[in-house]
Length: 191
Length: 191
Image (cartoon, rainbow over all chains, first blue to last red; front, side, top):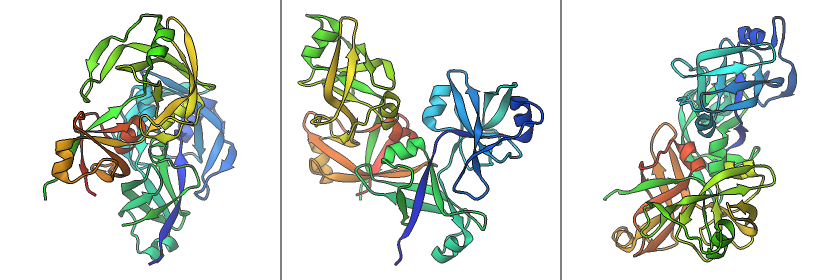
């Protein structure tokens, strides 16, 4: 049987902003500017960063990923969350109801969001053609193995299938460090 | 078949010191004092801490675990290693040849060690009676599952068997955070 090998991208802490929050943080009429395209078509790392400020600690420069979204969403690792002094849930991107809050500060202003902070659930983006070829359905939970001296099988890996996606597994820095994974390594879907 | 369930201890960054380094860092004639006994018989968290200083960052208060050992050994997570700006190997405790160096600073002095910094390889301490009951040999590599929304199977888990050990799995903070594990949670040896 063909091995189901996927490239892995390690997501450092980052934030998606709503247009409203871009205006508050960077000033009315401001727009995000593209620094670097990401693996998912249309997505990019912006030149702009914001400070995020929690009750216990802060990060002065958190990268903004564009384009703007309908709601702001900060994605941190559990390690980051301890540093900030917050307790965000593990969630799929976009599912922020009742998640943790945080204060954001930009050059033009600051805003405190009541929800929007999550620890991103590990997931794989599949183009529809990859998913079809491998018999994988959207929302399916997969098991994915990394080899090495910190070998791990990640369970509960969420499949996300769309004609707009490029094949890529996304894990956070805690998961990468726990398994000895670097950006660009590959993993195998085993179940 | 009986489930092989083990309690899990999450190891934060910590250091073991040689008697020579205790004398340099705390002054001739100084001794470590016991703050709290650990799960392994005879081991304890000391009241004393040292600063560890890397090329990129430092941690002002790293807990010393006693009693003194024949060589000093700093155990950090990969996340910690990035903060310090060093690249320690994943190793079993005690196997420090050619590992990373660091500067240690105490109230009475400082010392730079050329080796002794490791990322601890995940392992399970077995009392000989537990190992016999479950048919597990010293140095055997095991697979261990944690359930939950960050479910993981850790592979390459080293069995360490001794009549001086108490049953306990040791992982670092990256591994705990990646899998959503807290001190005192349990795991199952599956292979």
